[in-house]
Image 1: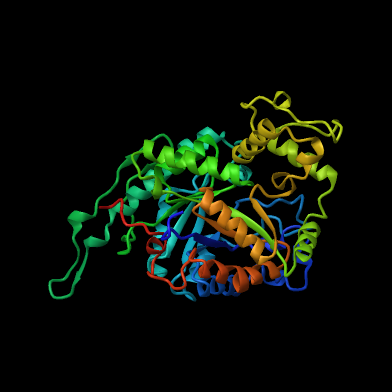
Image 2 (image 1 turned 90 degrees about the horizontal axis):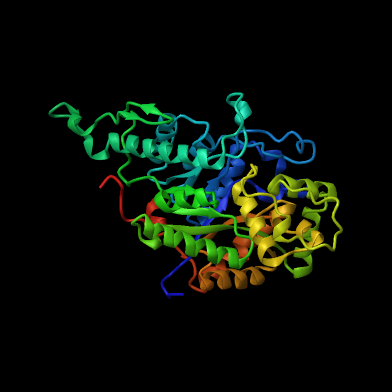
Length: 440
């Protein structure tokens, strides 16, 4: 690890400590789940700690099966929410999620560029292809992973063309001459492709800070190719250090294949942490957060992820590669399926071990349980091993985890020189160290 290399850290605004039974804690703040000031306060906490960005995940469906016991996928719209956050913050980046499967590219391009102006250059776009929600847009089944990413390539290309169609340099605003814009610099894109036909130009000029950074959250083969070609950062699901190293090495190689520098793409795994003043306290938090998951729920989770029913197998039977269904079988999330398949091929877990895996009990993320000091050791280990370039903070169990993250863990990272003690720039591009611009 080089001395001048520092972590890139973002905070999820999805209130992950409310997962499972966490929302029932007195300090959870669940009453404010749909109140914008709640998220503004979280963003201010993150900005005080000089984090690079806050990130708002999104889904376009409601999981009614779990709704009586948890918030499920209830959430405010990311663009609208982050616009309110933009007005109450000054430096922190604001990364909004927008699906390429269900939205029109012109609308997304305009919304994000508007957020970029309102936040003065702090917007980011988390590009997702969605894994559910087709029933809310038409009667067609969800497209395959391959088709969703093929569409995402075209969608992203259209959005970037629209952003270039009205460059910031075109703005003249000369009162004396009466010339508002150099019309020669504004032009239609006349895009006609397999999925979209868009004339353009966009009706919001590009912000002077440069292009909006792109994030991506899929780690399937198609997701990796997509991220390596366009993304500035990837939100990764890597439950262990080995999967983190493999993903980062692979993405850096793919970036070179796309004629990009390997450092152009930052790998940011979700770090789902349960922090306590003592290890015992932290483990109690973790145990309580997953107490609601019955064995039936865990068996169903495996079947949903892999398309494989293991409910009739003995708990001590190893799950081996030959038991896995064909890789062409449709699955809900190719990323999560690939993670579990890789685990089974490499480790041959028993049924009991598989049912206790983080990917099965609710998260495919890196899980840290312990004190702030324990978390620091794991972060240093992952960083020095080349398993990540930073992480997305996902506090678990209770609001206390988030408080300990800010009060104890972040100062430790600053003290070790792994994170900044003050912002050096005012835009998300500057926080991420992005210098080039696709418009140049």
